[in-house]
Amino acid sequence: MHLKVPRAARHRPFTPWWRAERTQYVLMFLPALLLLIGVLYPFLTGVLRSLTNEKLYVAEIEFIWFRNYLELFMDPAFRESLARTIGFVLAVLAVQLPLGVGIALLLDVKTPLRTFFRSALVLPLLIPPIVAGLMWKTMMQPASGVLNWLLGVVGIDALPWLSDPTTALASIVLIETWVFIPFVTLILLAGLQSIPEDVVEAVRVDGASEFQAFVYVKLPWLAPYALLVMLFRIPDALKAFDIIYPATRGGPLDATRLLHVMAYQEAFRWSNMGTAMAILFVLWLIAYVVSSNVMRAWQRRSGMVQGG
Amino acid sequence: MASRRWLRGGALALGYVVFAAFILFPIVWIFLMSIKDFRDIIAYPPTFVFTPTLKNYAQVLFGAASAAEATAISDYVRFFRNSVIISGGAVALAGFVGIPAAYALSRARFKARHSIAFTFLSFRFAPELAVILPLFVVYRQVGLYDTYPGMILAHQLIALPLVIWIMLSFFNDLPLEIEEAAKVDGASVWQTLVRVALPIVRPGIASALIIAFIFSWNNLIFGLVLAGGRTQPATMAILQAMNFDQIKWGEMAAAAMVSSIPGMIIALYFQRHLTRGLTMGAIK
Image (tube, rainbow over all chains, first blue to last red; front, side, top):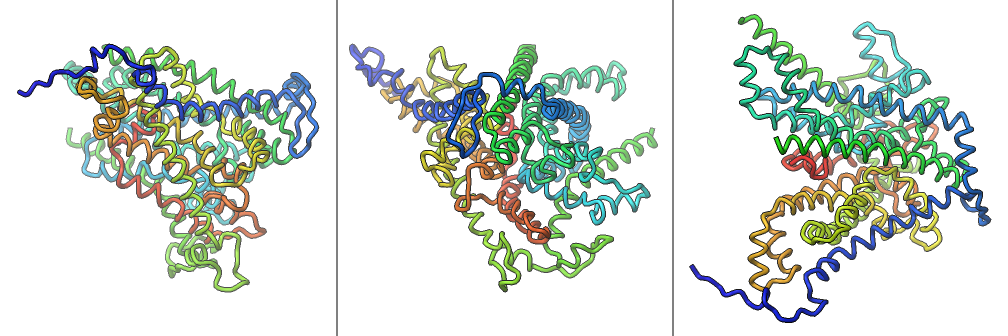
């Protein structure tokens, strides 16, 4: 073997600071840091703007401390939107987690068609959400949509879907589920496939039924993966916009006006920049608190999986 | 015993059928709509057998045949080109900036490392408007509103956290020994990255850039807020099909199919690192 004597690298008597490894790493990171500041700066000015009565296209700005926040929390429309947003997130989780586990179990079974189904699975995820929103809006047309026709074929009464306040938000949950169920399933499927085969086999040998193996082995194993699903899905559902905007624009009668949509309308329909930023800061705060807690829980649980 | 196996097989088959119908039916339906004549689109009960037409695609891609048929999305190609410029530019910039940054975050040992990485991550979870609404005001002041550079910069909010976190996961997996050897041979940090680390993580780079591209391409809200008439991306064009008294269903469907093409191609050809990319490296 040809052994090369290390050149001065290790024993170099003097390294000028601009050639030091540390400097080179800092330089490597510098452009990204500049962009990060470029993003942080508007965000921080946004926080300041939430303390003003700024209006779009109006030059005069007055500092009004927390009046925007006070007025928001006095405003029933905001409180309803806040409650609606939280309800929406809970509904999304309640539908998508069990459904995701079900589909993941289905795709975990070894059948010849598995590859095909897996390819089909990811399609909704890669279609622009706005396309998904319009697609479903088209199918959900009360009088002429294909969904009501299909319901009629099976003998079920037509539903008003997006056009009625009582069913609109549930319809959005359905569309959201169509778009994101692939994501949820991919994570849970990765979880199922990381279960060592001998573990499942061992409990089967001990006489456990398939159902018992699922409840006592697979479900606990999936817990950190479910946390990972929540880590991504909770903030995404909190800030839902791309599907709602084309499908309903927040209507009918505010039934689908979640906080992100409300902030957009406050800014561009009423040009209340200050109020819009106050809504967004509340939304950001909720997203931040929830996701950092879920993140911590996930790190604890996944550390246990890797360690055990 | 045999009957139970049949039952299980039947349940599985039923599950597969329901699942496939749920996932695929909307896509198939919109595809059918995009090749239907207007009369077939509004027909009720819906038609499944009809004479296919490419008129909607022609309308969307090559413009109206007559002035009477002109619509807002007849110059869809322009929107499509805007999307290519914005998302392509955003991903290229995020790659050049993000890959070295991820490498530095993975290799250098300085204290602020974790908090910086998490600040990047937190933008994945923050409501976009919290950043782009103030950005809208700033952009109008400095003249970046409705420009390609402005859009490409803003899209870093989507692309950069994805690239940095996905690459971070791949760099952290690399054994340090090879790079140590290169450094002993006198290679600088940059040389080590370009000649040693990058060739090994090539699948990671592909994964990061493709995911970033899809997310940037699919985005609606950035175009809605920061783009005016000149730089509106493809997702905005579809929205415009609805802004008239009568929704142009056929054209909307055709535009939707065309703007879904990049994602669909990638979905079919590139699956190996999809989960890892989508979870920003949390799942290997």
